[in-house]
Length: 212
Picture 1 (spheres, helix red, strand yellow):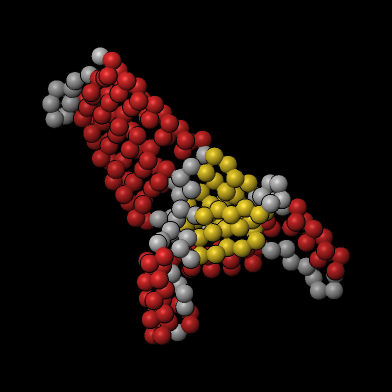
Picture 2: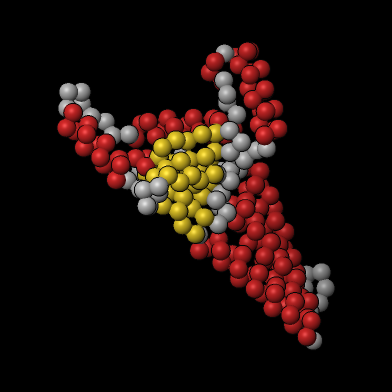
């Protein structure tokens, strides 16, 4: 299961298409003679920086659930928690996953996807209550973040270790194994590079413009 922001992806792809057309125009001169000047390189670097922002903010963020773990992929960092390490998944103003970290401490990751302001969340809950009154309990609380959290919790319940009744030793072993499971949080090298490389290029161009 993969949860993404449709609006963010559409906006990101629109910017990438815009940037690609403009960079091609700068290189090949579709609308005039190409001019390879410091200004041209500065504009190209700014367009590439915008592409890096579009990638990290619009395309990268996602919540991914598979048979082994849930991964919260935010613009610059990734949090991956095996189901045995997950303590809770809540969906209010944002989807928040609480899990046992590498050192045994409880960590939480707030997902970039489906974030809303408290005011927008209140409106969404009011709409859900109206739908509930019309269609029944099956849609109760089905705001985007709440519904996503519900689906993730259902997946988590399916992936919990199952033991046969009357086998306390196996149940205790499964509990110990769950306690030993740890999640992790790491930086995304491609995301950092997508911002750092064009950012440095823009900075170099600005310095050259000042000293020239």
